Length: 69
Image (cartoon, rainbow, N blue to C red):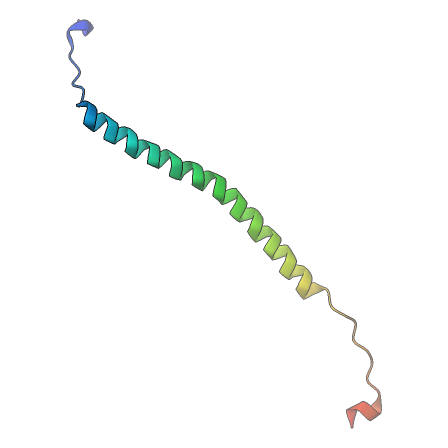
C-alpha cells in the first residue's frame, strides 16, 4: 500500500540550505535571461552604428593640378 511508504525528509537546517542554493540559482538564471536579450540588442545597435560610419562618408573633392605638384 502506498500509504505505508516512508519518505525520508532532511532536517530543517539542510532544507533551508537547499532553499538558499536554489534561490541563488533562480536569481542567476533570471539575471541571465534578462541580460542576454539586452546584450544582443546592444550589439545590434553597435553593429548598425559602425556600419553607418563605414558606409557614409563625405564625397571626395576633385584635386586640381596645382595641388598635385
